[in-house]
Each structure stands twice: as C-alpha cells, then as structure tokens.
Image (cartoon, rainbow, N blue to C red; front, side, top):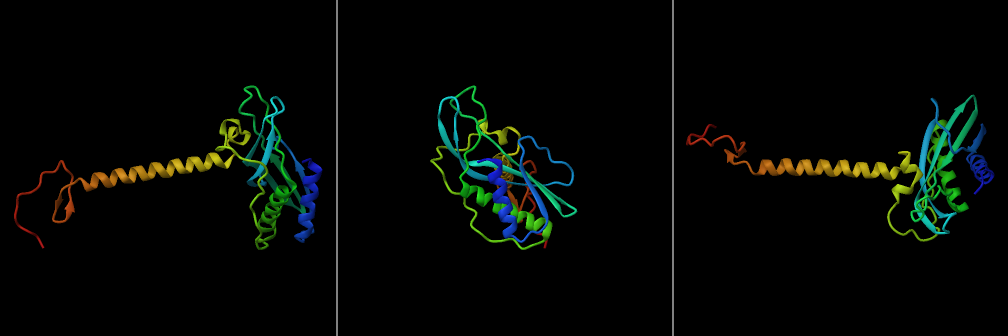
Length: 205
C-alpha cells in the first residue's frame, strides 16, 4: 500500500472525526522522534513475499509506529512500518508488508482515536479493533527476522520480558514460602532452623 492511500484514509478519518485543524500525514522509514512528539504503536496482520525465493508468510506482529504533534493548529503524523526478513534465505533483505486496506482502515481509526483523546480531550470512540487475517500464520513470532524486534521496538519483546520478570518473581516467592514452611514452630511462630528450640515448659501469656 502506497503513502497516498494511507494519507487518504487518514484525511477521511480526521474529517469524519470533526477535526478542523490542518494535519499532515507521511510515511518515513527513518524518522527519529524529537522533543514534543507523542508516540503511539500497534501491531496489525499482514502478509510478506520473499523477493529472493518467493516464499510467502503471514504475521500478526507487523509493527506500526506513529509519531504525532500539534502546534498552532497545525498537526503532523509520521508513520513507520516495520518489515520482516524471510527465515529461509540467509541473505534475505527486509521485505515490505502487504497490508489489506481493511486493516489500514482499522489502524488509522485507532490512530485518529488517540489523536482525538490526547490533543482534543474528546471521548474515545468504541469500535471493533480486530484486524482481518490475511493468510495462514504458521508458528510463533520470528523475532530474529523482525525489524522492530532488532530495534527494540516490537511489543513482543516487552511482553516476553514482562513474563520473564513475573515468572522470576513467582519463583522467588515460592522459594521464600518453601523456606518459611520448613522452619519449626514454637508457640505457633516459625523460627529459623539454625536456632535451637527452647526446652522451657513455661508459656508466657
């Protein structure tokens, strides 16, 4: 999908949302956000074709990254679309995703919703956000061939890191509970195993 199509979808959604300010939309592969830009990201479903071996695959982790700002009633949006490599071709290049127009519509609706919320304090519009599947996704997300993962942007990496932290916390808690449960009880209170139990028969009330 070319930049003009994305821009047309964006302008139509902004008009439907009642936004009167002038907003510019562009696709920029190497944009680096500066101070004052807000960031918004999401993952959509898309297909890929390898330009070397002809292999095709589908992914639900096609990362879209938007940077946006509004100043003096003039707004700007810059979008980055992250690519993927073919896992079969060892010297494959990053391939551009093939995104259905229906999925582009959903992505831009989400973006305009965020613009209305952040810049105009408008209520969030409720609409279906499930992307249309286009092809069969076989297996888990291929992190090694994902451009967003390589740049530390893909939310898959963050999700896995959070899961690892949560599991480590659960392991620590389970280990601590196990050590406490192994301590002998005196007067219904646990004491460390290295402390000898008292032979005194007096009970202090």
